Length: 480
Image 1 (spheres, rainbow, N blue to C red):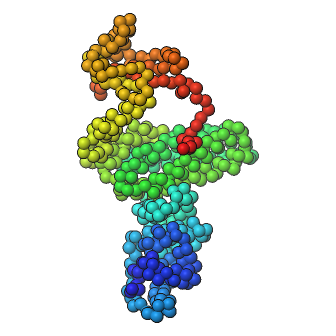
Image 2 (image 1 turned 90 degrees about the horizontal axis):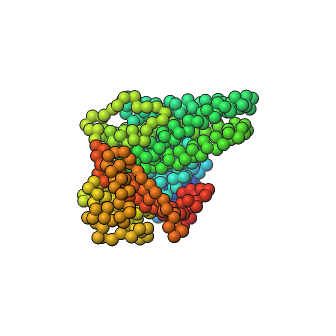
């Protein structure tokens, strides 16, 4: 094996396992080689040149000393190439990963900043995202990356601050997000200021804090637009790390917000003074991460057509802080309904695409019975779930709905359908007790995009168990 700046650390240790102990003793920065996660992620990409920069040692000295260690153990000295190496993008990611791993191991943030400046010098959003992706793929839990997020953004803040600020066009989704962020930053500052005054000006400060906390729906809307629209768009391009990490932080902020609101409503000044500054910091730190990491990454990855689709989805979710500056259609993207990528043979359903088998299975597994009658009052479909409430047979298909009801009910059926057909009503609902079960029956007018009457949907559900529910059971309470 020839030793050079481009020799991979992992390959070197695989060939000469004794070098792991040698390198750990050689420089404190190499102690992370003991960590299997570091070996699986950073070690796979890091080269001798990368290692020299991370450890701030002379590459020639490192190559010479490693060659001597190999000669002592094997009695054969490897050839050493002194050719210098310009770090590749992969190696830069490896250097970032090494710094994060050291922080995870309890390293000092100040030292990390110096290492960063020496080893990398600058970093863009793509490299930081790739670093998170690499560590997650290597087995580091998302929750652990989330814990490190504040630390590594703090370590890289100097380089990120040097990146050019985004200036998206008015009406662009990122422009609206950044307008939101001005409001969020102001809310965070106001929250922090009032928290400092809580001890000396309790009631007034609490009232002002409650006013800020009343903006929760706006903050939640900002995060939901990211989670439900922007993150899925990035996932199409294989970018998942930042999305998973940020969603976890969103939930932390939501929990902090609710805790602080409880404290403020209970006039617990001590709890307010203790928890408000942390929430304020997390709000403005998230703004920083969005504008220095997430939004530049999204601007790089998404096409104009995807941004037009992104905006249509956000328009459906609505805006509660800042409104889009103008109605914007991006170049090359018509304002048509969104059509997500689909495989051949699937039915495009507007908000997704399913095969006929999927549609059949979905309808069979609905926790309700459904029947559909067309605009001519002809029965066209009924679902065949395993626990039907009212019996149906294939002979019903093609019959008029009036012939499917006893004579005493026909007048009411006709009045409901006529009301739907004339646009007077959209829903008719009934409920009955049947053999100890509470049955809820609803009829819905089905209308097309032009508001034309296309038929009636009947939905029947046994709600006995639903009516008996009390308290709450959240998703995270579920046990298998």
